Each structure stands twice: as C-alpha cells, then as structure tokens.
Amino acid sequence: MTETLDQLRNDFLANVEAAEDLAALEELRVSALGKKGGISKQMQGLGKLPPEERKKAGQELNAVKTAVAEAIESKKLALEEAVLDARLAEEAIDVSLPIRPETEGRLHPITQTIDEAIAILGEMGFAVAEGPEIEDDFHNFTALNIPPEHPARQMHDTFYLPKKENGSRMMLRTHTSPVQIRTMLSEEPPLRIIAPGRTYRCDSDMTHTPMFHQIEGLVVDKSTHFGHLKGCLLNFMSAFFEVDDLPLRFRPSFFPFTEPSAEADIGCSREGGELKIGGSGDWMEILGCGMVHPNVLRACDIDPEEYQGFAFGLGVERMAMLKYGIPDLRTFFDGDLRWLKHYGFVPLEAPSLVRGLS
Ligand code: PHE
Image (cartoon, rainbow, N blue to C red; front, side, top):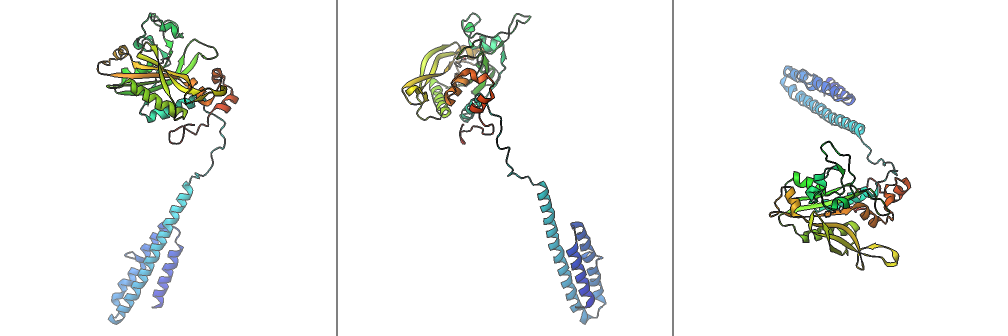
C-alpha cells in the first residue's frame, strides 16, 4: 500500500473515531465517501494509472473504502446508542421511590363500606346510579306509591324545605328509593342499579342520626322474581361479611313501593355476649326489600304486565357497625380524628373481590 493511501486511511479512521455527534460523522462520511470525497477522488484517479498497477491500486483503494465505511457505520451505531442512553437517562422516572410511608388520612368506615358494596355488586353486574339529596314530592313519595294522605309520609319524619310560591315543598330525601324512580324514568329496562347515598330523617337517639346512608338496589327485567332477590342478597351478604355459611331469611313486611315486601335477616350468634355474623342460632335484621309494586312501574311508564323487578334498601352504618364491630352509631359523625384513625381505612387499598375487601 502506498504511503499516501495509508495516510488517507489512518486520517479518516482517526477522524471517525473523534467524531462527537451524528452530524459531524455525516460530514465526515460525505468528505470521504461522497461523490466529491477524498476516496472517490482517488477512485477517479485510477484511470490514469497504467493497467498493470491499476488492479492492485484499485483493490487497495477498495479495502480503504470498506474500512472507512465500516468504521463510520459502527461509530454511527455507537453515537445513536449514546443519544438514546442520554435520553433514557434524562427522562427516567424512579418508580422505586417510596410513597410517603404513612398517610395520615383515613377513609371513613362509611366510605369503605360503600366501596366494598360497589365492588361486590359491581361484579354482579350492577351499575351505580345517583340522585339529588334534595328531592321533590313526586320522586320521594308519590311515584313510590305513597299518596299524599299516606301515613308513611309522617312515618318518614321528613325534613321539609320552606314552601315555594306554588305551595310545593322540597325535602331532604328520606331514603334512596327516589333513585329507583329517576333511573326507571331515564333508562329503559332491563335495569340493574345500586344507589348509595345520604338520606335524612328527623330522628336522633342512640340508634338514629338525622343523616344516615343507604344503598338502594333495583333490578327490572321481564322474568325477575323473588328467587333472584334472595340469591342476589345471599351472594352479596356472604361476600360482604366474608362468611360462607350465612343463612338468610325473609319476614313479611310492608313498604308501599314493594309487593310483596319483606325484611331480610342474616344468621348470627351471640354466644358469650359477643356478636358473630354467620351460622345459625340467632337472627339479625339487615334490610328491607320486595318486588317492585306495579304502581311504581306504572308511574315510570313501565308496563307491569311485561316487566317486574325487585328492590332492596340497606343501611350503610348498620352494615359497617356489624362488620367492623363499631359499637355506637353516633360516633360515626363526631368527626373525632382518633376514632377515624382507629376505625378508618388506608386510602390506597381500594377494596376488590380479587385482592380482598378490607
Ligand atoms: N326505602 C326503604 C326504607 O328506607 C327500604 C326499601 C328499599 C325497602 C327498597 C324495600 C325496597 O326503609
């Protein structure tokens, strides 16, 4: 190999090695291998050589060309990798960083209980529905088959708002059942909803607070029957209380908006004064339920000859007290942080049937 060719190769290779970025490398590639580049020029010069030298010189030149091209290619890969590495380093998020170890805040047992109920009933195909806490007469009473003169209106100990000019009065809803009406009026059956929320009754003693929470359930379909109600409640209760052996019984009852109506009890034991949910021995009243009254379906423009349904309403505080052994209802609303620290739940552990409820 001639001196100059050797020199040319070494210069190019050194420059390639020294190239700091992709732009510099590209410039080098053009100056070496481009049409007017150093090596190309040499190639053109070959023609002037005598034929016997031309072949050897051509081969040598080609070897240089290949060496430079390869060096450029591998340098290019290295530089590209470096660019990527730099970008990855710059954009990296350290997912291993711990969250603040102990969050001070706790979820209230009512929130937890509602979340658990939604997790279970959601899995069973129920969607969550909502309605306003300030209701009108139609949704809270009339459409629920509670006519103006019906004693249930007093029974409910309603908080009324001041009379409006037209003589009507809004009220704080006395139960979550008006959400049944709102859902049936706004959606076509088949329906399968639960409506958790606040309810209000003018009542305050050891076992009653003026504001409390209910979860309403409603299923409307063509062949929904009482057996479905029982199966649904059984599944729900045993999932909620995390007890396999949970007997459930119905006692005849009365609600204007269901016919027949029932109160449901679950099995429990009170041995040694300690209440345990599950097993036989004793009964604990847990909710009100029944088949949706034909008048209620009619009030919502649903034909009771074609559709039927069941509904249930349960008290959230009661469920929470039973499951988490909270003895006094009124403590729920004291806003005592020590109480919340004790009975509350860590916010990031959302209940799920797969991971566990609580
Ligand atoms: N709304 C009733 C109450 O508050 C409970 C209930 C709901 C009963 C649905 C039957 C069906 O007492």
